[in-house]
Amino acid sequence: MGSITPHPSYNLSNPFRTRILNGQITPLMSIKFVTGNEIPMMCKMAGIHAMFIDMEHSSLDMRTVAQLILACNYAGVSPVVRSPSKSHWHISRILDSGAAAVVIPHVETIQEVRDIVRHAKFAPLGTRGCTNNQAALNFQHVPTLMQNEILNEQTMLIPMIETPSAVDIAEEILSVEGVDGVLVGSNDLCTDLGIPGKYDSELYQDAVTKVIQAANKTGKPVGIGGIGGRLDILEKWFAMGATWSLSGQDASILQAGMKKIHENYAGISDRLNKKP
Image (cartoon, rainbow, N blue to C red; front, side, top):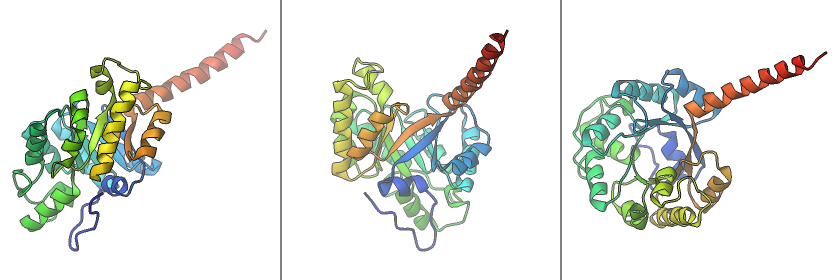
């Protein structure tokens, strides 16, 4: 599934990439609201190896995301960032901020795939602009040619497959040089299939099966988004070859904890009120 051999002089710490290329099941913690630099350390202590920082479905700005990326890298947790668009100024700034991987939503054509490769990869794979003292390499001064080779290899470009048309060309998408894997967007995929939220549907099941088979054929990793609460379906996808998933979001985790507190104290109140 690709090279994970460290460079003899410099190396980028990316446990997310190492794990998914080695076939290890890797859940990601999704961040939309809670952006304190304490969160990466909490993930580290909980055994979570990567954080999914979502700029598409949040109001997070680049400065906030850049600081969170730095906190992730120093904690030893891979920062995986979903770009709010396919634009080069989003992709390059996310990577220049030190992201271990950039996820690109709503990719539907091979031309779009080639375009985002150009934006995310240095020459000869792409046309990403060069700058030294990269955050991903802990601001070390690395010779430009060496730096560009390391970052091209060890930072990941991950298009999302979220529509039936993208499913149909999944193998072609994965075969493009510079694409390091894909992420299935289950919610948008189901919506476009006309079955929103129906993850047990044969339409959804067949579509994801096709994507995973394409990933296995091309030797590239595939992740699953949108069904973190359906461990039964995720286990099926992992058994077929998927290696990572978006498995918990800051807001849902906080709400679940708060609801549990409410239930516990409501129970105490009810029991006391029933006493004569």
